[in-house]
Amino acid sequence: MRLHKDILTISFKHRYQIRSVFKEILGLCDIQHFSLDLVTPSSEMLFFSSTPSHGYEICKRGYGQYDGIISPGYYENFEFYWWENTSHKAFSDKIAAIREGILGLRHGFMLVRKWNDFHLIYSFATKSKDHHFQSMVLNNVNELLKMGDFAYMEMREAYAGYCGEYTPPSIEQFYGFKGGMPPARYTKDYKQNPTGILKNVTRVDFKRGIVIGPQYS
Image 1 (cartoon, rainbow, N blue to C red):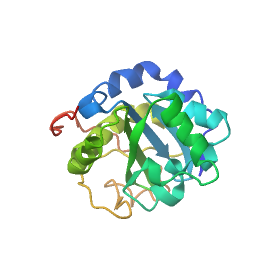
Image 2: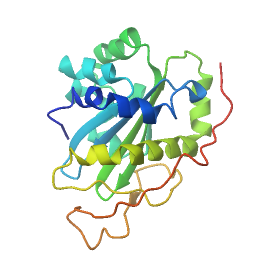
Image 3: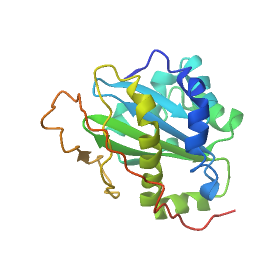
Image 4: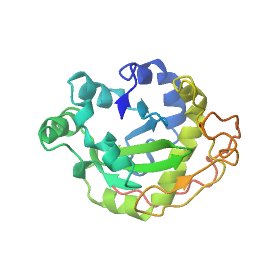
């Protein structure tokens, strides 16, 4: 995995669209950070983040390649994982100091989709210290996946501008959480376009049906 050359500026460049889309997610059940971490079939990653200082602070200090939450060893093998279980041992304290000490982000976790050899990684966190947040997450994984799918589809056109020869897939239907390795999903025209250069532009409205459990204080 390698980071896109403009990784430090993309979220700032698209901040107005990000704010408009992500407001549908932020605030629900104390979710105070959401990021789309997107990886092309050629393993290039970029992110659109509601908290761009999160990735900016880590990457500008040279820890990006050591940040376990965006390690292929995790997003290629786990559909769900907590931030706290992934940090590179040599830099875990420094990265945690940025996340918690500077930004106040806690109980972070990732949900992963694999579509047409792209990885769509949904990153969530709260600033709350309440451990009930973790129980809420486990009880509402499918609703959180719907949120991530919605945000991805809303940002898909912007993302396409950074993918070179690849066309980001359209999510054509919702698939619930399975666990383990992210199940491989494919758009209906994937087999006709094995290079990943797709023409499908179907849109799905994921705003409807997003119902999440009670908020914990």
